[in-house]
Length: 193
Image (cartoon, rainbow, N blue to C red):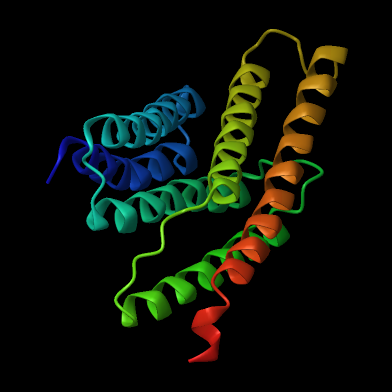
């Protein structure tokens, strides 16, 4: 259990904590959820960086890291459905696309594992994860700030911020599709067996 793997396990443990803070309303719960999600996202940055710089890349890490990412982002998107976050974004369809991609990639990982191979995330998967995390952070920030009694609802700032995070969610959904297609193409050999 290397330090990078411990950070990944921490991210796994923070995912349900984040979801609880997101969906159970109490004063400043969006801020609390934002803080936990931000901290968990940082573990994703540091676990990979430390693993590469110290040569601590392990098969366990290759398995746990994408699992932790999926748990965290899926918790957010499901929580958004419960809380009504997303505005113009039909979160049900975003979740359907995200989960379909994850099932596809997991299936390829299982097929690879049965052949004795571990398939690590590719650059498209990393772009997908980062874009999802950025979109989630933007949405949580907006929901927290707009909930403060500052009179921002309906202002140009609010419209611009909501538009920005809606675009970010759609971009992350597009990257979800692209990364899934690339993953399937790069690992098509496992379909032949």
